[in-house]
Length: 336
Image 1 (cartoon, helix red, strand yellow):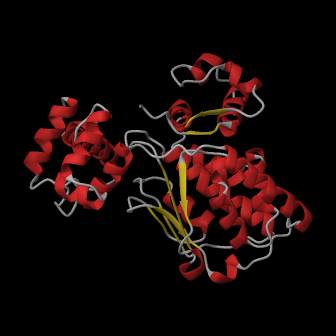
Image 2 (cartoon, helix red, strand yellow):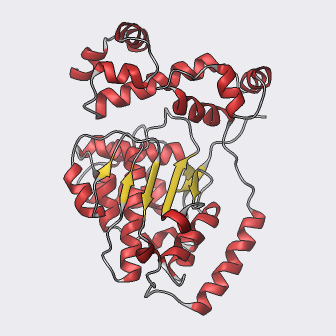
Image 3 (cartoon, helix red, strand yellow):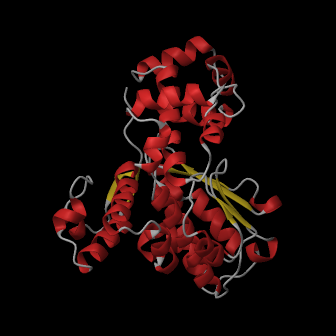
């Protein structure tokens, strides 16, 4: 049975759309080709497939010519429109408990985001990713969410704290100093995953918005919501893509190795992918094509470096593959 697409709260698509209309863009310019329409503005609690939400943020960046529109929106936007998940976080006693609760109850707001706080206590590490295929461009929304979370925690703690480190998995070559200033540390792009590291002092910071009585009520409410909400597990394609990405640069992304990483036999993996009407080689090809376009468009990596990161033995084999995907050489694509 085909899985439904992971969904996510779309309140900030609604907000962004309203902002664009106020700036003078027409409804046609704002909504055309996005999966949304003007009716979105009338919805009280909009929810949509995550890939449509991420796509709208990318559309807004292209429409306005603002390559950091998501990040800038997050640095100033109050996150209270997230509703229950936001209030349970902000009523928590400390930054640490707020993050723990947001991670636990994220399903109230989203089927798409996965948040890992296993190393929050020991290392101050919070990691996250979106359970959607790599072809779904999400840079603007990822930056919006990260900046919005930190801005919200700073307001709730009444402290403009800095982070120890910030990593994003997508590449970026513009506005880097702006990111460093906001997060208070050197922000790195094109890393193995999205993550932030908090100092233990910051994690222990009390929230001025803490409310013990409200906190108890909201926790009970969230637990009830989770019991009623079925979890939309990531598709096997997403799991395979992630495993391939981890092995590409080492040249070990063979089907046998990926199957072993996922705890299944090669035959079982092939069968599972066939049920999704795809193959391992198709996923590998699509992932490489998606990553190649992103590296060429959004980074200063040399062609040889990109070929290496994608697991090619040399530049010529990468160039041949890229021309097969796009009809252009990597150099033509980058300068086009």
